Image (cartoon, rainbow, N blue to C red; front, top):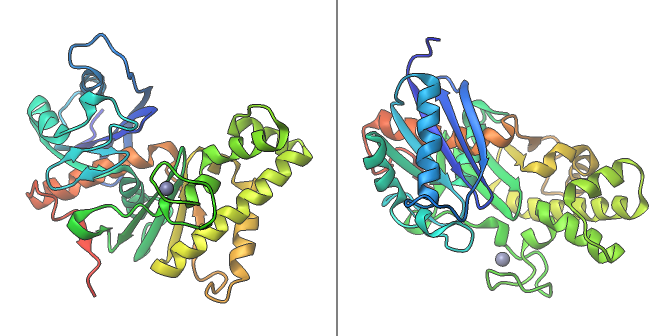
Length: 320
Ligand SMILES: [Zn+2]
């Protein structure tokens, strides 16, 4: 198979490791998904798993990528290409992972936050392609929010990623692991669906089972999804009020059941005067579980194309 130049994107979550080979136009040439091995016999720890997955991708394509990008959950120092997330990632995947990976693979490696990667991907070749500004909201274990304008990630002070999943929507609400109270992700993450159903029924539920129950007409599950829509809309309204994007892209496993809550989210948002109905598109992402890895590959492309490892080509400060 002739595929020309390609870039490797690695998406590193607390649960899943995903690797995609991406062509210059955004075509996914190959991709793989594995569970992250938190306990491994490999001397290199979980980092060895990432290297092995990268090697398999290279073997499948039969050529080396131009550059690679690694998108990771939690705080990522884009300049130093280091990851600082010992809450959900194994020890060997913390620290200057970008530089270590660069030495191991012999190619330039960019590092990016995973929510920013998802936004970059959808704005490049996904449902927000062609839009000037896009906010991506990943409804997963928590909520990751990334913002892209003119094809670049919007970043904050010290090149930080803004953690909009932790903005407060209920100041009297439950305490969050982040130290805040009533954070958006406590009531609108994918995880929160199972938690809400458990509170209602007194037994354990997986989110996918709640969705199946709702589709079958179960009254409790329908209540959970109705309240879920309200929680998603409340936070989304704030995000839109602060960023006013052309497109909001929703991602995460729960969007497979978007029919259970997205119509209500759109309806509730359209009742607010700040939301000109139809002006801000709210869409489910086109790239699905590959969004993070495609975005990491795009980050690698921007950095290698600019010939600048420091990733200044990747991001744009939100300067007026
Ligand atoms: Zn929080």
